[in-house]
Length: 215
Image (cartoon, rainbow, N blue to C red):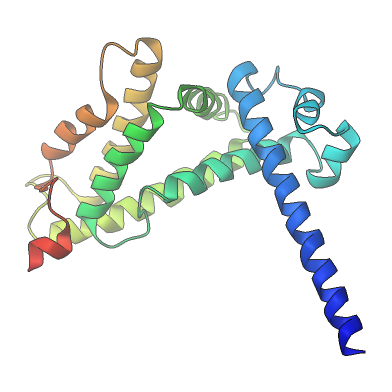
């Protein structure tokens, strides 16, 4: 009896792992297609073909194209969170992470272009990614504002800059730099520009971690 239960549990774990691997493959393929063709032109059939399955098989994992798009965007955010401790209370660490993210984004221009295009299109309330971007901006503003409150408390946010204004300014900087970079990549280095811009309103030692600075 015990062996039977163990075998059943093993099969369930194996099935779950296979399902997760399939979902990951679909997300990678969708990111490739959407980045190359755009969301509207990219087809589920093309994505399914890249994974080696039918369109019906793909829809077993994602109920429609809109759901797949949101999952792709969430996957991109997960990768970003690996570089930016966005929920940290350590303001300096968050700013360093955002600079690291900008450097990483320079290596994935197709993804940056997809995000820039979708964020503009999604201002329309009927766009499939509208709710996602509303949530994302609220989440990002809130977390950066909290991190900037940390810098303010340490006297490292310059006079006249408030945590909320800093959060709004930072997001505007990053989005604006991305658009300029997409139009002509020879004009600027996003990470370098962010580092300089951040220094105009926050006192940050870019080479020393907060933990080390406190020692």
